[in-house]
Length: 276
Image: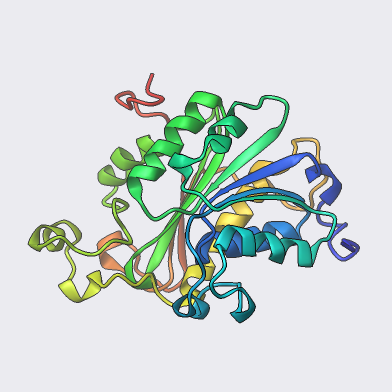
């Protein structure tokens, strides 16, 4: 990789020993992985049990040449095509069924970050607990239904709350995160979200809508990966939770197009994972 055009902004070599563990290689996580690969990250461990289908092409960075292939293995090829010196391990498995995932978190000889792009909230909570227990930072992203916006959350051991804390925090601030990408279960959803039922189609939006959230996710992950003494020509992020609206969404408190709100989530006292 020729990094000459970005060397005045950051030092890619400072990321050489960082490992990104990707939980999921769907359209959102794949774009974030692509951006990290272009900005100096060379070591990846990828998990996804799914295969690329024709319906995925309207949102995924992978193309027709990868149809029918496992997404993790195909994404590894994408990274190698961009940087032949990269080191990528691909696991065509579910996170919960993969001993190498837990083993990676237990490895204290490497600096790791989990990039969480799975749709299932239970899996997110499980990854959160594993990361808190192992002291591993992670970044999670959620896209709201129909691509109206999303959230990016960053967990750092010893600094701020965990993903489990986010549930109560979001409730206090009138945000909606639980099952943000799932289909409705009935009228109770309409009460909770205050939206018409037509907003509950299982469709997270255009690739452009997803892309905004993925790019924020990649930027937050890059921030977490850079060493404190690493060269950078931009200030550090102070927030650990970013809510972004692609378009006005009164139900989420967003009144403008492309509106971002920054928060710092402290540990919640009643959190069963990291609470004090």
